[in-house]
Structure formats: structure tokens, C-alpha cells
Image 1 (cartoon, rainbow over the protein chains, first blue to last red):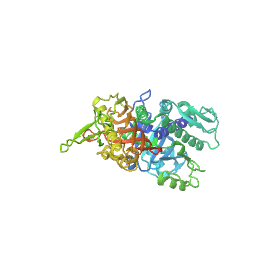
Image 2: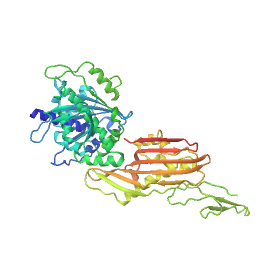
Image 3: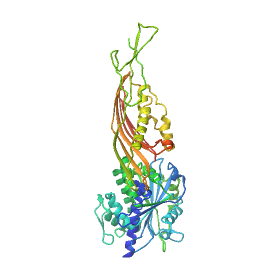
Image 4: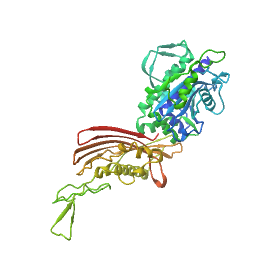
Length: 299
Length: 215
């Protein structure tokens, strides 16, 4: 049960992180506010982990790691069980998301071993090393914040791809367009038992939630007024590390310019292995295609 | 016989001057060397005075208010943009002085380059009579950081222009969102913008273009 909960936490966190990052919530997180939604804890952390040019002049391609950890009050945990790497190309107003299953092999073990005391920096760097790109920003979220954040957004509008009915995660969905609240988003992001490919499909579904978060935020944070309100609200529940509100706003503007319909949601190919999932055929070509301009031309 | 002279009047509140010798607002000048000949100069104005609308401050930290001086400064910055980018071209076809200085480095290249045709009415056929210019009140939204310091202020407003050129009627609708940041010496340069302009030119062609920059 604890393991399941940890997984859920991680997935939930990742979903939130992604939605926030892409949708401009990143900006809010960057705002530096550390006021918890209710309990006084910080639900999100955003780090600028590289001094890439993108940080100062976001006209260039940059990469954001979205990390979901399994931390939960009373239980602990710090494993990055949800891992996504988003490449953003401001020139073309496009973004591509690579979903990395938590059991993917990295340095001889599962990539979710990449933990540290310095927030999401270590797992973000692990993602960057695996895929071969420099990661400029890392955003992490834990279980405690996930539900509250989604609810704070007023839910997420998402097109659930297939029916889900999993008593472990509590995911019970009919396929189709629907508005889901924080608890439902958590359940959707936890569910791996409804799919033959388990965690791999779950990772892809997390990507769907992230994109849905972007779409929802764009719809509800229109113009400067909406953007400022969103940033301020979300900023009260985030902790910044190396970023300013100005940075956050500029990232939010970039996010607002990206059409969610064009965001690629790609789970990296992984295969068999003992103890961890090795990279599948074509992974190297995929990573190279992704790394050059954050856009997939041949995949 | 009346001669028409176009004058650039940017100051807010300048009265529009119609044609005709008996127009009280017209400026009449007399050539002293030819007292029997009177020349009447009819001033065509494209001046418009923006007015403050709603104001809201979103803060990631403590509650923050916008003082009157800052409101006035943002309104003045928006006014300056309209004066040089819209009003001036209506009269002369060219932007007014200082257009390039309205923007900070993050958007200057776009604002003076690729987006210039959207942000300004440069190149249009000038009006030959005072146009009707109707602005909406300028809404100001501000974002304050965790310490309560203002980091961004956005001015949002629309402007409708209806005028007549030598080639026929001209209408322009502008939807403006200008985001300012504190600059040196109390200035507020534009650091981001979203502007959409719809123009219906004398040939009845209507075009809508949008420019956005400042991420």
C-alpha cells in the first residue's frame, strides 16, 4: 500500500509540475512564495539548475525537467517516480515532452535512484544525462500539493483516452472529454493496472494530464490580468530557487504562446532488463532528434 | 481661399479644428506684407487623451497597492505610445519622435522591426481632417513580487479610429496590451506586448494583424 501511495504521489506530483510549468504556473512558482495551501508546507519547488542562455534570454531552446516525488507528510519519501523532460523552442512556439518511466536504466540502476538533498536538481540532471540535453529548469512537486493545486486551478479539462477502473488508484473514468478535480487527477496519474504496459502507459498518461493542464491554464489565464492573477495565486504555494518573478513571467509568456495541440507527448522506448528497463531500439535517434531544437522532426 | 495645414498635436486635450474660415478653433494667420490676402490654417488633430480605468494588483507576497504616481506614469507611458505610434502616423504617415525608446532591450528589435507594421500606423495615407478617435479606459494590472515590489505593470485598452484620407475613409481598431517594467530614471519601458490591429483602408480592404513579444 505504501508503495502504491508513493507511486501515486510521484505521478501526481509530476502531473502538477508539468501543467504548472507549461501553463505559466511555473511563473507563479518562481514567484518565491512559500505559503502552503493549508498546512504551511511548500508544495512545489522550482530550481534554475543551469546557467543556460535560455534563463536569461528565453529566445533559445531550453529544457525543463518535471519531477514528481513520492514525498508525503508522515510517510516521507523522496524518490522521483514521475519524470518528464520538456523541450521548449520559443522561436517556433513549440514544445516536446519526453516521458521517462521510473524504472528506466540509468547508471546501472533505476533512474529514480537519482535523489539528493538539493531538490529536483539530481533527478533533473539524471534526465539530462540520459537524454543528452542540458536542463535549465527543474520543477518538483510532491503528493501533498498535487490535489490542492489542481483544485486551485479549478480542475483540469482532459480527454481521457480509455476507460479506467482501478481500485488501487481509485481511477474510474469513462473515455472522453471531462473536467477532473485534484483527486481524480491523482487517481488518473496513479493508475497502472488498467494497462498491459503498466507504468509505461501511466507515464504517457501523465503527459496527457500535463498537456491538459497547459490547455486549461491558457484558457483561464488570458491576458496580463489573468496571467498576473494566476502567477500570484500559484506563487504563494511555491518555492523558488534561483529564479525571480520576472523569470517566471517570461516563462509564462512563452508557455502562453505554445499551442497545446501541437505539444508532442512521447514516452521514450524502453525494453527488457533485470532490475531496470534498458533503452529500447531507436532511443538514441529519438534523443538526438529531440536535443537539437526541442522538436521532433523524424519521430 | 483657405489653405490647410496639418499640425501635429499630441498634447492631450487639444481641441480638434474643423475646416472653414469661421471656425472658432481655427488658427488664422495674416501675411503683413499682403494685408488684403488672408490665409486660414485649419489644424487637423489626431490627439487623443487616454483615461485611467480599473486598476488591480496581483501579488505573490503581501498585499500591494498602486500609488497615484505610478498609475499616472503608466498612463503617460501608454499615452506616449499612442501619440507616437498611432496619432503621429495618422497625420504624417510617419511615427513620432522617440518611438524606438519606448521599448526595453528584450523587445526592441521586434518592436522596431518585424512588428513595427502592427504596433504603428506608419505608412498609412494620412487623414485630411480630424478623425474620430475613441479609446477605452486604460486598465492597469500589476504584478508584485514576494516583497511587494512591483515588477510588471500592464496597460490594456482599445482604440477606434475613424477618419478620411484623400483616398477615402479609413478605420482602425486597436487592441493593446502593453506590459511595462521599471526602467532607469523613473521610466517605464515596454517589455512585452500583445497588439492586434484591424484596418479598413479606402479601398475597402480589411486586414487584421497581431504582434506579440516579450517572453
